[in-house]
Length: 329
Ligand code: SAM
Ligand code: SF4
Image (tube, protein in one colour):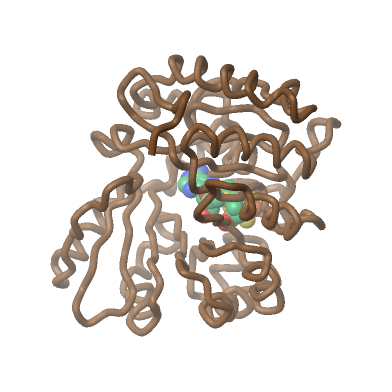
């Protein structure tokens, strides 16, 4: 497909994938993300349905075909299903996804599917109810696990589980997670804990490299799948005896950024060229009228030239990101 102008950076990377945060608010208190819960810091509102429509229209006209709604917890927005519908119905958008902590998922999975969502990532950091409570501040493991069933039954084409690897909290559960996916057609992705502005002490205590999982998988007969065209930075493993797959997301690994295919827009309309890049560029002034879409596209294309080859996390530089709830992980 030919796009004029296409979203591409100075390193030859294309950006078919937009992660759009729709709120900073979250109802969980994950110990690595919002240990004290959500605290309101700005008074200006989150993007409206019309602003979302204009943003996604502009991006799709530049080659974006996949949009993930995230947050904070995206489903706390009362109009979440309306937003999903707007995105899913935008011409050119082929896949509408979201990431959720699974709150009330058993009751709501079908509504989400009916709104046009087809891919869901559910965060589960422990399969032990007490530890799940300790990590998230909520005694809701049973509900979230039942949410996985509900998502599969509702017909989601892709059901993934996000598990942040935490030393001393869940690194002894890797075999338990493998059993969990033995008979479930889901992809469980171990995510290496990332340092943010707020979590340095926690990071030093809990970070473990994702290679720990890789070694265990290889020892148990798991094999790395060939990377599909256009796939993101996750490495995916499969095993003939398991219906599910395992993904590893290792942001500190060499070449992680080389396969970057995504851009992020915050809940107040700031374009972030990198999860850990500084600042963010305010697109909101160009989201106020349908007549501004061409100007918005021009601005986005120009900003792509500022995208850096990679992040500087190895040097402890987390950009200005206090926590991932502010731009969607
Ligand atoms: N609230 C939703 C959820 O938790 O699924 C969506 C937003 S959350 C920021 C998106 C993903 O980022 C979650 O899977 C979460 O576990 C992950 N995450 C948050 N902070 C992280 C960190 N410091 N390092 C690695 N992953 C993190
Ligand atoms: Fe909320 Fe998600 Fe952050 Fe947990 S990881 S506190 S659920 S935004």
